[in-house]
Length: 397
Image (cartoon, rainbow, N blue to C red):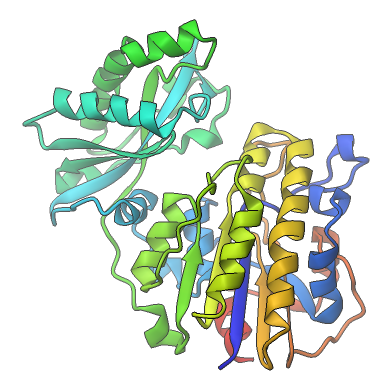
């Protein structure tokens, strides 16, 4: 049986950065193993975000996993709720509940200083108690990424703005709108008063840390129904990921999730531990998908330096060891595919088709390229549109 590895450096694609000599982070980073994949195989661009969709990891990763968002996407939050094993009633609408920091009416920090999961759980517990009996529940997640469910099918009819798309913008211009917006705004206002005066935030302020003085609801939807990956492709997969979005998608596809101690979903993640886990998993599974959030977080931070560091760590500790392991098998393939760009100059996502590359024991090299970056990908021989067709191409061509 062939072995497959998919490396997903979230948000790795970018635009030329003046601080990097007008190079992108992929161009500036020392990534010899990613470059070697290009040298052995193929490179191109993939349109991961269909028309009419907001560029985000939910839609883009669903595309990369081989599923058409137009058929299967119902919202970001329900996918994350699946990862947390949150009980969902048929009349529930699921919202992402970000803990954020607002100052002078502006979205100062959509992560609330990357509040710890323990602190976030304390805030969610007290919010849940405050809304008891109203059909509204708050559920802890990872750091600032939490979940709210509301027993009201009409709550689906609201337009919400992702907080990471409005850094330093006045939030009054981006409040929820639509048929059910008043109730959602009321929940946000009441919850914000509770968390702003919470002891946890008093302590954070005293320590000089960013207080989580507000919540922001967005990404709502109902739980999607998706055919299992093994049924579709005949391949038994597994996933390594720290963030709930990717873990939830993996569960919906029927992939086991391999927990890795030290994997944080942030720039301080243990890259080497993820690499070791991927290498070990290839002995048991046909396909292993490794997601790394760090490049995306660096993009949202506006830090080219951190993004370059993250890419180099991914290359050294994940791509390199995985390549070495794959070469022990007679039949193998590797795919490296960022889901979308998160340019450090914009600090948010764009829908520009990102680069991808693939190589394998039976995949011929057609063009003489040897660098994994955006400019090379545009000159490559592959243009995958729509993006959900890439998985079929990767596994079966």
